[in-house]
Image (cartoon, rainbow, N blue to C red; front, side, top):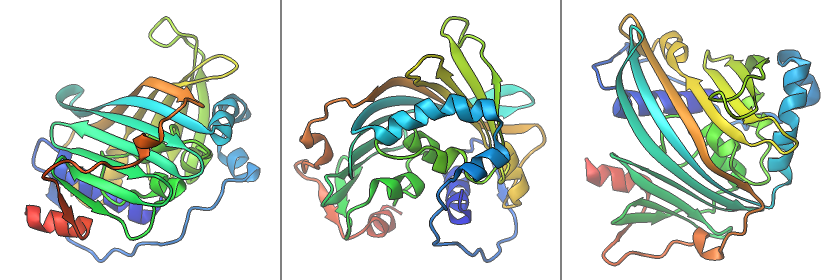
Length: 287
């Protein structure tokens, strides 16, 4: 993950999802990079991933790279854990549809936020709430949306978007900037579904576990992302002892080459909704 993206994650978490006080450390000037992540090549994957993991992930990745369209529903549970006990859980739902080359919609709904991005390939409109929207100056490319959304939509959306958007190579998100990627086991998921379990450790100390079905055309079942060590190592947040923050994404719907109506990607103004010049203008007024 780019440093600028990591800082956005830290800001989102510290402002929106911690249920207990977390004291920011002394402010420091942060430099962000505008460079795009380098495309993953075979040598990069081989350097960090075992051969079994690369071979088992490739059928899933190839499906997404070759997909003309997708439809997905993903449930997110964000757990705050102290000394092994879950002290708070926040739930939300992503509904995502896409169609190559650059038509997509991303909808996030939870108790605090209902935001949706519409892109028909020519215009990108962001429904900031049911009563507010803004139109971006330039349309948002699908790969750009995966790497860096124009507004926060959950604490860590990149891997979910990488696993649900048509024509996108998930390796750019799941195999770049890694310390290791391993195939851990082939135990049945929840004791019922034949599955493959992978674990990745990123250079920024984020740890993820991914379960996919074990068949010729695998589907993602669950992604668990532990952000604790990244937050602790970053130094920007002072966490209490025994603190853990982890996300669980459950894939309830995941379809490749699913027919999507063009209306999914176009914003229909709701009566009474106010248009803002920018996202910044909306949040400034909301303060």
